[in-house]
Length: 343
Image 1 (spheres, rainbow, N blue to C red):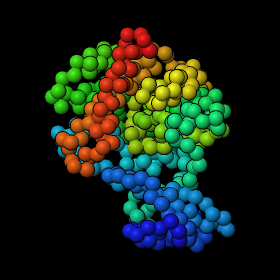
Image 2: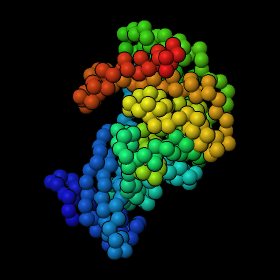
Image 3: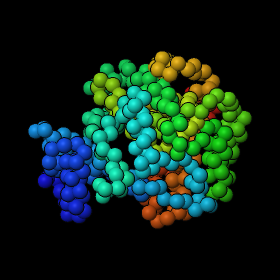
Image 4: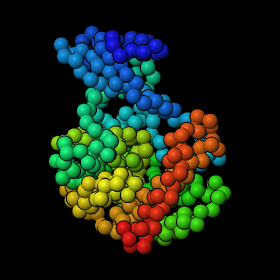
Protein backbone atom coordinates (compact mmCIF):
# COMPACT_ATOMS: atom_id res chain seq x y z
CA UNK A 1 0.00 0.00 0.00
CA UNK A 2 1.42 3.41 -1.00
CA UNK A 3 0.75 7.10 -0.35
CA UNK A 4 0.09 6.41 3.31
CA UNK A 5 0.85 8.81 6.16
CA UNK A 6 0.75 8.31 9.92
CA UNK A 7 -2.76 8.48 11.29
CA UNK A 8 -6.03 6.69 10.65
CA UNK A 9 -5.29 5.63 7.06
CA UNK A 10 -4.08 2.06 7.79
CA UNK A 11 -7.24 1.25 9.72
CA UNK A 12 -9.39 2.81 7.02
CA UNK A 13 -7.48 0.98 4.29
CA UNK A 14 -8.07 -2.34 6.01
CA UNK A 15 -11.81 -1.82 6.15
CA UNK A 16 -11.84 -0.47 2.62
CA UNK A 17 -10.03 -3.54 1.30
CA UNK A 18 -12.71 -5.82 2.73
CA UNK A 19 -15.47 -3.61 1.29
CA UNK A 20 -13.95 -3.56 -2.20
CA UNK A 21 -13.40 -7.34 -2.20
CA UNK A 22 -16.97 -7.95 -1.04
CA UNK A 23 -18.82 -5.52 -3.30
CA UNK A 24 -16.61 -4.83 -6.34
CA UNK A 25 -14.32 -7.83 -6.73
CA UNK A 26 -10.76 -9.04 -6.57
CA UNK A 27 -8.75 -9.09 -3.35
CA UNK A 28 -9.59 -5.46 -2.77
CA UNK A 29 -5.98 -4.51 -2.07
CA UNK A 30 -5.69 -0.74 -1.62
CA UNK A 31 -2.74 0.48 -3.68
CA UNK A 32 -3.03 4.16 -2.76
CA UNK A 33 -5.23 6.18 -0.44
CA UNK A 34 -5.33 9.95 -0.23
CA UNK A 35 -7.66 12.30 1.60
CA UNK A 36 -9.09 15.06 -0.58
CA UNK A 37 -11.47 17.01 1.64
CA UNK A 38 -13.00 16.86 5.08
CA UNK A 39 -15.55 18.79 7.08
CA UNK A 40 -18.33 18.63 9.60
CA UNK A 41 -20.64 16.61 7.36
CA UNK A 42 -18.45 14.94 4.74
CA UNK A 43 -14.99 13.61 4.01
CA UNK A 44 -13.69 12.45 0.66
CA UNK A 45 -10.86 10.03 -0.17
CA UNK A 46 -9.33 8.98 -3.48
CA UNK A 47 -7.99 5.45 -3.74
CA UNK A 48 -6.92 2.85 -6.25
CA UNK A 49 -7.42 -0.90 -6.16
CA UNK A 50 -6.58 -3.77 -8.48
CA UNK A 51 -9.71 -5.27 -10.03
CA UNK A 52 -9.40 -8.18 -12.49
CA UNK A 53 -5.75 -7.43 -13.16
CA UNK A 54 -6.17 -3.70 -13.77
CA UNK A 55 -5.74 -0.75 -11.45
CA UNK A 56 -8.94 1.24 -11.06
CA UNK A 57 -9.48 4.58 -9.38
CA UNK A 58 -12.36 5.23 -6.99
CA UNK A 59 -13.71 7.89 -4.68
CA UNK A 60 -14.85 7.10 -1.14
CA UNK A 61 -17.21 9.64 0.36
CA UNK A 62 -18.20 9.30 3.99
CA UNK A 63 -21.18 11.41 4.94
CA UNK A 64 -22.30 12.30 8.41
CA UNK A 65 -25.61 13.62 9.63
CA UNK A 66 -25.60 17.39 9.39
CA UNK A 67 -25.12 18.99 12.80
CA UNK A 68 -28.34 20.14 14.41
CA UNK A 69 -28.56 23.91 14.57
CA UNK A 70 -30.06 25.68 17.55
CA UNK A 71 -33.47 27.23 16.97
CA UNK A 72 -31.93 30.71 16.97
CA UNK A 73 -29.15 29.76 14.53
CA UNK A 74 -29.78 31.59 11.23
CA UNK A 75 -29.19 28.36 9.30
CA UNK A 76 -31.94 26.47 11.11
CA UNK A 77 -34.53 25.25 8.64
CA UNK A 78 -32.31 25.46 5.55
CA UNK A 79 -32.54 22.45 3.20
CA UNK A 80 -29.71 19.98 3.70
CA UNK A 81 -29.42 16.46 2.28
CA UNK A 82 -26.83 14.28 3.99
CA UNK A 83 -25.79 10.70 4.62
CA UNK A 84 -27.61 8.03 2.69
CA UNK A 85 -30.08 10.60 1.38
CA UNK A 86 -27.36 12.28 -0.67
CA UNK A 87 -26.36 8.89 -2.06
CA UNK A 88 -30.00 8.32 -3.03
CA UNK A 89 -30.01 11.69 -4.80
CA UNK A 90 -26.97 10.72 -6.85
CA UNK A 91 -28.50 7.36 -7.76
CA UNK A 92 -31.73 9.06 -8.82
CA UNK A 93 -29.74 11.49 -10.95
CA UNK A 94 -27.79 8.67 -12.58
CA UNK A 95 -31.02 6.78 -13.34
CA UNK A 96 -32.46 9.92 -14.96
CA UNK A 97 -29.48 10.31 -17.27
CA UNK A 98 -27.77 13.14 -15.42
CA UNK A 99 -23.96 12.86 -15.72
CA UNK A 100 -23.12 11.56 -12.25
CA UNK A 101 -20.16 9.66 -10.78
CA UNK A 102 -21.35 6.02 -11.01
CA UNK A 103 -22.15 4.70 -7.53
CA UNK A 104 -20.49 1.30 -7.09
CA UNK A 105 -21.07 0.67 -3.40
CA UNK A 106 -23.63 2.03 -0.94
CA UNK A 107 -22.08 1.49 2.47
CA UNK A 108 -24.09 -0.59 4.93
CA UNK A 109 -23.92 -1.10 8.69
CA UNK A 110 -21.77 -4.23 8.29
CA UNK A 111 -19.11 -2.31 6.34
CA UNK A 112 -17.99 -0.48 9.46
CA UNK A 113 -17.47 2.97 7.95
CA UNK A 114 -20.81 4.58 8.62
CA UNK A 115 -22.92 6.18 5.93
CA UNK A 116 -21.49 6.88 2.52
CA UNK A 117 -20.65 5.44 -0.86
CA UNK A 118 -17.91 4.53 -3.31
CA UNK A 119 -18.03 5.87 -6.85
CA UNK A 120 -15.84 5.53 -9.89
CA UNK A 121 -13.23 8.28 -10.13
CA UNK A 122 -14.29 10.67 -12.89
CA UNK A 123 -11.34 12.22 -14.69
CA UNK A 124 -11.77 15.90 -15.46
CA UNK A 125 -11.58 19.47 -14.25
CA UNK A 126 -13.72 21.55 -11.89
CA UNK A 127 -11.55 24.66 -11.63
CA UNK A 128 -13.32 27.43 -13.55
CA UNK A 129 -10.14 29.36 -14.35
CA UNK A 130 -8.84 26.42 -16.40
CA UNK A 131 -12.18 25.60 -18.05
CA UNK A 132 -12.66 29.24 -19.10
CA UNK A 133 -9.18 29.87 -20.47
CA UNK A 134 -7.09 26.80 -21.31
CA UNK A 135 -6.97 25.81 -25.02
CA UNK A 136 -7.73 22.15 -24.29
CA UNK A 137 -11.22 23.14 -23.16
CA UNK A 138 -12.14 25.16 -26.24
CA UNK A 139 -14.40 22.37 -27.62
CA UNK A 140 -16.20 22.15 -24.26
CA UNK A 141 -16.81 25.88 -24.19
CA UNK A 142 -18.72 25.64 -27.47
CA UNK A 143 -21.18 23.10 -26.02
CA UNK A 144 -21.13 23.85 -22.32
CA UNK A 145 -24.35 25.88 -21.99
CA UNK A 146 -26.42 23.46 -24.08
CA UNK A 147 -25.10 20.44 -22.16
CA UNK A 148 -25.86 22.16 -18.85
CA UNK A 149 -29.41 22.71 -20.04
CA UNK A 150 -29.72 19.04 -20.98
CA UNK A 151 -28.35 17.88 -17.61
CA UNK A 152 -30.69 20.12 -15.63
CA UNK A 153 -33.64 19.14 -17.80
CA UNK A 154 -33.05 15.46 -17.03
CA UNK A 155 -32.53 16.24 -13.36
CA UNK A 156 -35.90 17.97 -13.13
CA UNK A 157 -37.58 14.86 -14.54
CA UNK A 158 -36.68 12.86 -11.42
CA UNK A 159 -39.81 11.62 -9.65
CA UNK A 160 -39.83 13.23 -6.18
CA UNK A 161 -42.00 10.43 -4.79
CA UNK A 162 -38.88 8.30 -4.46
CA UNK A 163 -37.11 11.02 -2.46
CA UNK A 164 -39.41 11.70 0.51
CA UNK A 165 -36.68 13.49 2.48
CA UNK A 166 -36.66 16.50 0.14
CA UNK A 167 -38.19 19.67 1.58
CA UNK A 168 -40.11 22.37 -0.28
CA UNK A 169 -37.98 25.48 -0.79
CA UNK A 170 -39.26 27.44 -3.75
CA UNK A 171 -39.23 31.20 -4.26
CA UNK A 172 -41.39 32.51 -1.43
CA UNK A 173 -39.95 30.47 1.48
CA UNK A 174 -36.43 30.93 0.08
CA UNK A 175 -36.67 34.72 -0.01
CA UNK A 176 -38.26 34.73 3.45
CA UNK A 177 -35.50 32.55 4.90
CA UNK A 178 -32.66 34.63 3.55
CA UNK A 179 -34.38 37.79 4.76
CA UNK A 180 -34.66 36.22 8.22
CA UNK A 181 -30.93 35.42 8.15
CA UNK A 182 -30.05 38.98 7.17
CA UNK A 183 -32.39 40.63 9.68
CA UNK A 184 -31.14 38.31 12.42
CA UNK A 185 -27.81 40.11 12.57
CA UNK A 186 -29.47 43.38 13.52
CA UNK A 187 -27.23 45.44 11.23
CA UNK A 188 -29.31 47.25 8.57
CA UNK A 189 -27.80 47.28 5.08
CA UNK A 190 -29.87 49.56 2.81
CA UNK A 191 -28.72 47.76 -0.35
CA UNK A 192 -30.13 44.49 1.01
CA UNK A 193 -33.36 46.15 2.18
CA UNK A 194 -34.02 47.33 -1.38
CA UNK A 195 -33.04 43.94 -2.78
CA UNK A 196 -35.50 42.09 -0.58
CA UNK A 197 -38.29 44.54 -1.39
CA UNK A 198 -37.62 43.87 -5.07
CA UNK A 199 -37.57 40.09 -4.58
CA UNK A 200 -40.84 40.07 -2.62
CA UNK A 201 -42.52 42.19 -5.30
CA UNK A 202 -41.32 39.99 -8.15
CA UNK A 203 -41.77 36.45 -6.83
CA UNK A 204 -42.56 33.97 -9.61
CA UNK A 205 -45.94 32.35 -9.01
CA UNK A 206 -47.53 29.07 -9.99
CA UNK A 207 -46.00 25.99 -11.51
CA UNK A 208 -45.40 22.57 -10.04
CA UNK A 209 -42.24 22.11 -7.99
CA UNK A 210 -39.62 19.67 -9.19
CA UNK A 211 -36.49 18.10 -7.79
CA UNK A 212 -33.90 20.89 -7.79
CA UNK A 213 -30.14 20.41 -7.41
CA UNK A 214 -29.78 23.63 -5.43
CA UNK A 215 -26.12 24.35 -6.25
CA UNK A 216 -25.72 23.69 -9.97
CA UNK A 217 -22.78 25.92 -10.96
CA UNK A 218 -19.16 26.09 -12.02
CA UNK A 219 -17.10 24.26 -9.40
CA UNK A 220 -19.71 21.54 -8.95
CA UNK A 221 -19.41 20.20 -12.50
CA UNK A 222 -16.57 17.93 -13.68
CA UNK A 223 -15.67 18.82 -17.26
CA UNK A 224 -13.47 17.32 -19.93
CA UNK A 225 -12.55 18.68 -23.35
CA UNK A 226 -15.37 16.54 -24.73
CA UNK A 227 -18.08 17.93 -22.45
CA UNK A 228 -19.69 17.67 -19.03
CA UNK A 229 -18.74 14.43 -17.28
CA UNK A 230 -20.36 14.61 -13.83
CA UNK A 231 -22.48 16.78 -11.55
CA UNK A 232 -21.29 16.90 -7.93
CA UNK A 233 -22.48 18.05 -4.49
CA UNK A 234 -26.15 17.18 -4.23
CA UNK A 235 -26.47 18.18 -0.58
CA UNK A 236 -28.61 21.29 -1.22
CA UNK A 237 -31.24 19.40 -3.23
CA UNK A 238 -34.84 20.31 -2.50
CA UNK A 239 -38.26 20.64 -4.11
CA UNK A 240 -38.64 23.98 -5.80
CA UNK A 241 -38.93 26.09 -8.90
CA UNK A 242 -36.95 24.29 -11.62
CA UNK A 243 -35.82 27.57 -13.19
CA UNK A 244 -33.88 28.27 -9.97
CA UNK A 245 -31.12 25.88 -11.10
CA UNK A 246 -30.78 27.70 -14.43
CA UNK A 247 -30.71 31.13 -12.79
CA UNK A 248 -28.11 30.10 -10.22
CA UNK A 249 -25.79 28.88 -13.00
CA UNK A 250 -26.18 32.29 -14.72
CA UNK A 251 -25.48 34.32 -11.57
CA UNK A 252 -22.49 36.56 -12.25
CA UNK A 253 -20.47 35.24 -9.30
CA UNK A 254 -20.23 31.83 -11.00
CA UNK A 255 -18.84 33.28 -14.24
CA UNK A 256 -15.42 33.69 -12.62
CA UNK A 257 -14.58 36.64 -14.81
CA UNK A 258 -15.80 35.07 -18.03
CA UNK A 259 -17.69 37.36 -20.43
CA UNK A 260 -20.73 35.14 -21.03
CA UNK A 261 -23.72 34.54 -18.73
CA UNK A 262 -23.64 30.73 -18.43
CA UNK A 263 -20.61 29.84 -16.34
CA UNK A 264 -18.67 32.59 -18.09
CA UNK A 265 -18.54 30.67 -21.39
CA UNK A 266 -22.06 30.13 -22.80
CA UNK A 267 -25.24 31.92 -23.80
CA UNK A 268 -28.64 31.87 -22.15
CA UNK A 269 -30.12 30.93 -25.53
CA UNK A 270 -28.08 27.72 -25.69
CA UNK A 271 -28.84 26.92 -22.04
CA UNK A 272 -32.57 27.32 -22.61
CA UNK A 273 -32.46 25.33 -25.86
CA UNK A 274 -30.74 22.39 -24.16
CA UNK A 275 -33.12 22.54 -21.23
CA UNK A 276 -36.28 22.72 -23.31
CA UNK A 277 -35.10 19.87 -25.53
CA UNK A 278 -34.39 17.59 -22.55
CA UNK A 279 -37.33 18.57 -20.34
CA UNK A 280 -40.14 19.46 -22.71
CA UNK A 281 -40.76 22.60 -20.60
CA UNK A 282 -40.74 26.19 -21.76
CA UNK A 283 -38.51 28.72 -20.02
CA UNK A 284 -39.65 32.34 -20.09
CA UNK A 285 -36.88 34.93 -20.03
CA UNK A 286 -38.46 37.03 -17.27
CA UNK A 287 -38.71 33.92 -15.09
CA UNK A 288 -35.03 33.16 -15.64
CA UNK A 289 -34.18 36.84 -15.05
CA UNK A 290 -35.73 36.72 -11.56
CA UNK A 291 -33.64 33.73 -10.48
CA UNK A 292 -30.46 35.17 -11.99
CA UNK A 293 -30.93 38.46 -10.13
CA UNK A 294 -32.03 36.71 -6.94
CA UNK A 295 -28.87 34.59 -7.16
CA UNK A 296 -26.77 37.69 -6.53
CA UNK A 297 -28.90 38.69 -3.53
CA UNK A 298 -28.76 35.15 -2.16
CA UNK A 299 -24.98 34.96 -2.54
CA UNK A 300 -24.65 38.35 -0.86
CA UNK A 301 -26.48 37.01 2.20
CA UNK A 302 -24.39 33.81 2.11
CA UNK A 303 -21.26 35.97 2.18
CA UNK A 304 -22.70 37.83 5.17
CA UNK A 305 -23.41 34.52 6.87
CA UNK A 306 -19.84 33.35 6.30
CA UNK A 307 -18.38 36.64 7.44
CA UNK A 308 -20.31 36.50 10.69
CA UNK A 309 -18.85 33.06 11.51
CA UNK A 310 -17.11 34.52 14.55
CA UNK A 311 -20.52 34.71 16.24
CA UNK A 312 -20.89 30.94 16.00
CA UNK A 313 -18.71 27.97 16.96
CA UNK A 314 -14.94 28.40 16.88
CA UNK A 315 -14.50 25.76 14.16
CA UNK A 316 -16.13 28.14 11.67
CA UNK A 317 -13.72 31.00 12.35
CA UNK A 318 -11.52 30.40 9.34
CA UNK A 319 -9.61 32.66 6.99
CA UNK A 320 -11.78 31.33 4.15
CA UNK A 321 -14.98 32.30 5.96
CA UNK A 322 -13.81 35.83 6.62
CA UNK A 323 -12.48 36.22 3.07
CA UNK A 324 -15.87 35.22 1.65
CA UNK A 325 -17.58 37.60 4.08
CA UNK A 326 -15.57 40.54 2.74
CA UNK A 327 -16.95 39.86 -0.76
CA UNK A 328 -20.56 40.66 0.09
CA UNK A 329 -20.48 43.95 -1.84
CA UNK A 330 -19.60 42.23 -5.14
CA UNK A 331 -22.85 40.29 -5.68
CA UNK A 332 -24.89 43.26 -4.44
CA UNK A 333 -23.17 45.42 -7.04
CA UNK A 334 -24.05 42.76 -9.64
CA UNK A 335 -27.68 42.86 -8.51
CA UNK A 336 -27.87 46.63 -8.92
CA UNK A 337 -26.33 46.36 -12.36
CA UNK A 338 -29.28 44.11 -13.27
CA UNK A 339 -31.81 46.35 -11.54
CA UNK A 340 -30.62 49.46 -13.35
CA UNK A 341 -30.23 47.74 -16.73
CA UNK A 342 -26.44 47.98 -16.86
CA UNK A 343 -25.99 44.17 -16.96
